[in-house]
Length: 588
Image 1: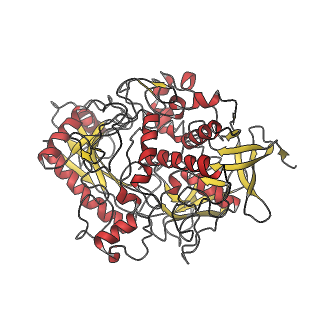
Image 2: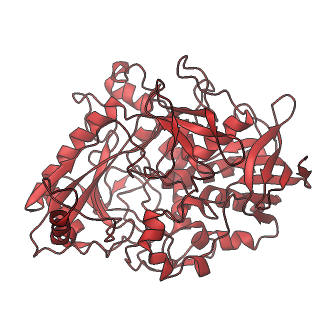
Image 3: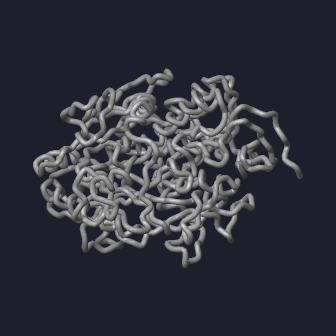
């Protein structure tokens, strides 16, 4: 049965999450009629995110109540191309969002800007260390933008979120209390830093005494009430402990529902359709222009939505899959190194250290926000000399407790049995007396790590699943070992009775949560031979398609990606409104 062809609209946005909401708002503001297609259900703070049901660890942490349904749509995984990929039956390592608001509903709120040496990683590395510092097979490349380009868009995004923090570099002048390694910013954060938990205070003192530069983590769980430029008012974070994997009931965490979506839904130029599974973007006979998208609604009916402009703003992995399913851009072939879609898939290299204190030291890990904590950036990116170390990239170290809930957090010292009465006794003894240090590190892209379509497995609509081929690069394993050792040294200086470090080791597994920071696959850049989109996130091959999200990252940096995703969204929206709409066509 043929798809029902709908009346044409000016623009279609695929995914009504953070990126989709932002782009739809900018396009409707410019006078365009916009249709937003969301595969999941409609969701609002009231009634969907309210307590006590939102504080259900089994439903949201264990059973993944806000996460993509792997029974209908998942990915297949293998560590290397010589293996057979198998479907991920239960998301654990990373947690793609679904439903209105996307993954920005259940994120933690860490809001960091990438540094200029992240955005110009190839050029910067060669300038400082020479070309031999980049080994064969490492796909390090520049983004096509720098920190100066993105600063106004970082600023605008942070003021949309109401981010709580302290500037460390105002217009080139270093400011005490902030991150001294950040690039110059035009103004301070819109709200002051969150309160510092006890474990973070211990970390701050120990790190400062060792000569490092601690600062309060920038957080989009707000420290005080704030009304953003869109007129949306957020409240003060209650430190309830339910942030990661949960929606916020208090209007205190920045998500589409609290910063923008209600305004957009009142705009007559915007139409949202939920429970619509987009199958493909349709192209003209020359494959040079997108003409429409095909989707299936909740009743199983197939529709074709014509549009002049298409914004692909889904979760990073789904952005890549949509281009592959639609035949937009040449698929990457790791054997030849040719092709761009699926190239440079990267992840995040995390590790940790636990500091065990006597029972007189109480941490209260259940009284935290998703982004409360104190960190150091001394080992972020290229903030330290890599010359003699044999690796690129870095990590921040911090006392950051985002999951101190009793079912999920059960710290035990080395040597504790993994189950049984002795394990239970150890958990009870150490739960409230342990500081968790997070080492949150970068991930370089290498030739063999990539994304493509699986030749065997299909989703509920009969389309090939995305296949992930990934293992931790040796570079990142070395980085993790070096910086985890630094964290252990800080942990000892904090005065704990025992410190246990756990550097990242291979092979990578999808059975253990690490981060939901999947990046690459539709990378941006100035060279169409190594990037799927240009510096404005416009497809090189189909100019009326823009792809926006963490899939644009050529490699992943030390910091969490959301601030950069938001900055790039505003960067692309500005180019679309001011340059593309007046004269449609390639912007480069």
